[in-house]
Length: 399
Image (cartoon, rainbow, N blue to C red; front, side, top):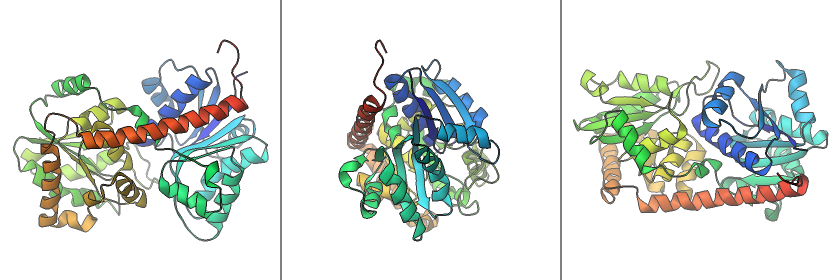
């Protein structure tokens, strides 16, 4: 009999990076245990159903999106947590902050599952920035009882080690979005032809709502620097759409629109907003067509790594700085105040342009190699998880 699986992560929020993680997890489960009944606890059921239809048509799983609010659906959520055979937490940057608070919220489902005697797996969640004394104690108690414990980076591994968990019990993987793979060159050419971008010099931006909507103003000088070249086109990659008023970051497209308002009419004609109706593969392909990208969102940097496109980052959050350090690209971090400094900004643009000039005909081999290393770590995580599934739920004959 196929297992009943419940997944909880930052899903149904319109975040394309988190969508990429979920897609890889569901593809993995369909390969390992086809026919399983999978409930995905999420923010927005309709949005998640649309994602499944667009990105996972015909997948061999019985998928059920379910709003994660205990207040709105107490019986259904409790049934999903208490009645599953396996509860999976992750991925994405979930386990940070205080308890009670953010950390308590994300560990609520795992605690219910453990109380009911269910198996618990940590699927490469981001673990960083624990605050206070209660948060570390709570995470340690839950993580120690997990039946499969994996992290996506060294920071998560070190945090769990500091909590006293034995390193041999922790699988050090990588963000599962790395398994999306590099872009297809033919797809890049087809997308450029469809959008009339053949022969144009493309530069990418990924900005999120941040600090009382300051992002548009911070990126304005960068946009003007790029668009001073009349042949340049700025691609604004929106990796989160349709955010709600209560969300901490609402809608990247709105940041892009506000950025456009800081430009001249002629410059605005050379800014394209990308992402609302594009697949993840198309987004990665268009990033692969860019000379370089300046980004805030972690998954914009991951997608550029897959595409082999040079990139710099504005570290609005510790996880962005940690990613750049992990890749050895700390010299490509730019502090927010430097975005309004013409000299510093021009220097960063020159560095990125020089990095691209070293490989004008395609992706940077050095960056591609980094992406391949990270994809290998993500595959090793799946291999370790698959071995656990074989122990817990032996395969049926013929499946």
